[in-house]
Image (cartoon, rainbow, N blue to C red):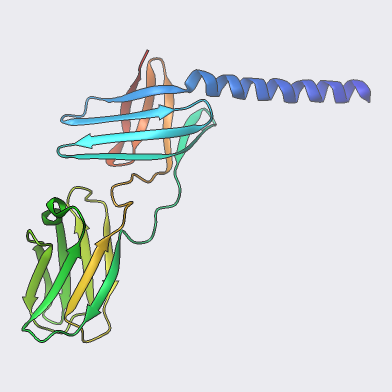
Length: 211
């Protein structure tokens, strides 16, 4: 009986040692390869946390979370993405001839990169915010407002409208450019990793490990 317990303990210790060795050998900095005008990297830390960087055009984005080595693959997960990337500050009836959607932020330079779609009985009205973060249509009853950020095109938030208000003001949540990941999988290869990217379509992206 003692011999069986000893063998079982030895097997468990060996398994833990192999897992720790796998994490240690996989940990490192990996750079995305072969995607034009795009820079991206994943830093896998020995403590099973990761940092993610993505740059395209004028926008730099980052994310972070935890990684695990499961069934021969690296699996990335971040905290859950919040339900909304915008918050309604105020809505009210104003005495003019417009339905107005406004986005406010301390950085006015970013405001023209937002867009809105207003759902009306006559169809969807789509447009870009001006330099003041405002988009207007002729005053009408509306059922919903969808907000988009063109520099992070996968991010949008929909707000149902059940009142007769014609002025709506929103603020931008601080996590709007944060990268959230859920079960992104990567396969270890000779010189790096191969698999998915959280912001790009496809499952065969190559990441080269930096020496």
